[in-house]
Length: 223
Figure 1 (cartoon, one colour):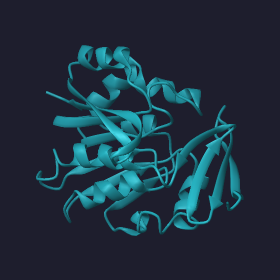
Figure 2 (spheres, rainbow, N blue to C red; figure 1 turned 90 degrees about the horizontal axis):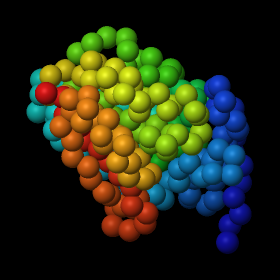
Figure 3 (cartoon, rainbow, N blue to C red; figure 1 turned 45 degrees about the horizontal axis):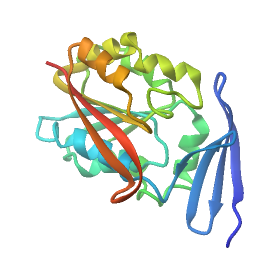
Figure 4 (cartoon, rainbow, N blue to C red; figure 1 turned 90 degrees about the vertical axis):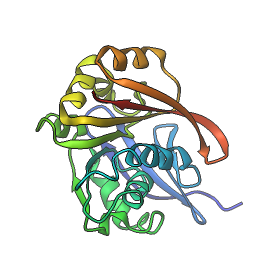
């Protein structure tokens, strides 16, 4: 079996520690500490996050979508593929090196979504971007860290608190969709979404389309 080769490493801003990019043949992996954060062979649930949310807003005039977390570009690619030519997709990525990797080592994995004219990249905390302007987005997709149970950057926890949910609700247009990816189900997070006035659908999807670990996606609609 081919060994893993370290391509690059960086430090997650704040308290996140070391993030490393590895390659083995045609497979890529990003890890933080001893935990694999993502793998290029398993992105079915990330695709599903974008597909399920964007299908609900794709027919709107000039839909505007915010994605929190670039990852390996699969969520962004799926969003672009499910939106029309007039859409705008803003991607907020906290770790600058992840943006660099998506322009170099990982560019071909998702067919260079950063080169799409509809894409705008913000090297920033998505929580800050969400709070910039009310009624700004038709959909907000959070593919950040490990979901409500943050793994790499404890500051990400605030995205999933009642305050973070309220901020996302304000940033959405009426009828807007908050889509959230998580490695695990979380009943308390579902309760917080409902408490903030969202109507929600909770979907279980596979990491590799039809097999692999089960991940959870929330689709929360603003009234």
